[in-house]
Amino acid sequence: MSDQPRKTRCGHHRPGPASGFAMLPWLLLGLGSLSNLVQGDTPSPWLGGTGLLVFNTLYIHVVFRAFDPVRRRGPGTWRALGGMAVMTFGLGGAYGGSWLLFFPLFGLACGTVLRGRSLALVGVPLTLVVAVVAAVHDGWGAIAIAYATIMSMLVTAAILALTETIMELRATRQELARSAVEEERLRFSRDLHDLLGHTLSVIVVKSEAARRLAPRDMDGALAQITDIESVGRQALTEIREAVTGYRDSSLSTELDRARSGLTAAGIEPVVRQSGPPLGPRTEALLGWVVREAVTNAVRHSGASQCEITVNGAPEQVRLVITDDGRGVRSGPADDVGDGAGGGTRGGGTGLKGLTERLAVAGGSLEAGPAGPEGRGFRVTAVLPVDSAADARTTATATATATATASSSPTASAATAVSPPPSPSPTESGQPA
Image (spheres, helix red, strand yellow):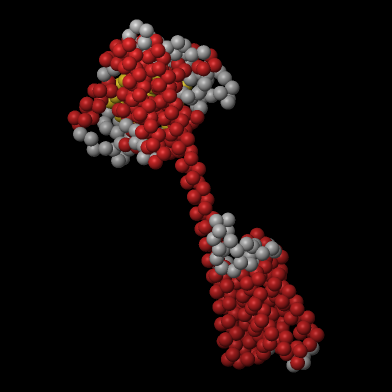
């Protein structure tokens, strides 16, 4: 097995032993046996020398395989451990003395491979057998040999297990960091799409209205230009808030903007709102739905009327946005419309993003034709009521509902602005 790098991709040092090389110095415990062979104090020196060589070879083979989780669990590792057991008990049981130190070495090799319950299943019987074999040669000294064997096994296993856990935690932390970055990028891209798509659509519609009004009604054109300036400034503020992640859109604000944008586009807005006050998260999500659906209605629908209904209940709130425009038509999968009255059926970047947002909050989003023969378009959003709803006063809630329900002043203003020219077929098929 090749030596593992000491540093991770983040530059942190890998904790614990880097590879099997860290386990090789323990082979010095066998120097006593080698000395006995050289000095001729060991019977059958050729047999003892061969056993020493085989033991060291198997030890090196096991400890290097132990640092690869896949190879550690392989049958080759277990066969090598079995061979080590035969050589350890054969040499230790036959010669005794310094050869008994092969038992702690065998325990250390077992500690590099065994984890969890297998430590107890192997360690306890091994210690008892080692104590018996060592007692035959060394009497009470067997206690030290047995203790060294079990401790070398447990300490080695504990250190390596801790090392592996730390590495797994580091890998998990890096994965979580990457996921957080991807989630933030996705949030930012959704916010930019929803913010800029709506704002630019309103600016284009109001610019066309100002151009048409300029020859005959300069005051009306100036009012439209003032609105464009206000929308632009508001867009700058919202983009800054989107960058910092603290944007909290109000449903009532989005409904007011929807009435203004629809009116400027020559679409009569009809807004109805009922039910108890909503929590900030619910209002923010519904505000995004209103923004996206109205933007698509202005850009693609060619409708004369757009109805927005908010029905609140103790358990859930339901938002329905319906227009009487061209509806949906078939198109390629890569040219999917974004919402209300879009050129093609389905959910583009806007509606897909909103569907994911609402799903995370336990809600749902549906979009499709509003009437027979595919005429009109309807977007329906359902959300559970936020448990942390604002403790708004009854007077504020009543005033908000009254303001959003009264669409007649803005609807009458639609007569002052002629409807914009119908978009070309290519333009009507593009998503918001």
